[in-house]
Length: 306
Ligand code: MN
Image (cartoon, rainbow, N blue to C red):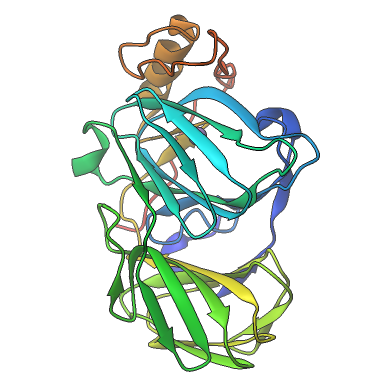
């Protein structure tokens, strides 16, 4: 196990996730990674689709996290146990704050035009993770621009541009477009970051990084220099190193095995109907995704950097 407190810059390759675990949609997962648990409070990073099969992710629960849905193409219909029913399109943000528990579904609006994009989770800090669930859709997000780049900031802050999205720890989540062959992106030395190309290969601080891989940058830098073909799409996420020990399992972010077991049981006992913790997502005729069995070996938290 790598000691997270002294981790240096590194490149993380994504891995494929079996289709049956993610509602029929092809997924390439890069966080969590065996070499790196998180970047700031970002604890999960998937690129999904487009798949031949339409996206049809039936009701499933979340706790202890915020789910960020950022489409790059297509349209996704989100429904949740709070009663929200919201389509999200390219350039818009769906932000589901699970707090102590929520359930939702995600479906392609047009099965003939499957959506693709990025889905990420933000771990909630202790003060927010037992709170009430909420959902927000943001159709207009702030822009930023600098030497060789422009960006839309969907979460947190980048170069003074602040997203209106409600978050609970200092963060950056932005999509950049290279406007020249060299982009000089100002960053905060108190944050760690990761940069991913959503199009072709790039260089991050002179290190080659293939599309879909993540280049991790530890705290301390005031600028990251990216070489990319003009027009390339990049993702940058960052934040203050997350101090808490975390236990991530299935769709839950917790602190202990007891919590995970309680979440798993309260969802499966409801059997798709009303769960006191997670509620009910209407409109699916009782169809739902059950939590898998817990592993035979008791789950253990992974250490934070506090
Ligand atoms: Mn979900």
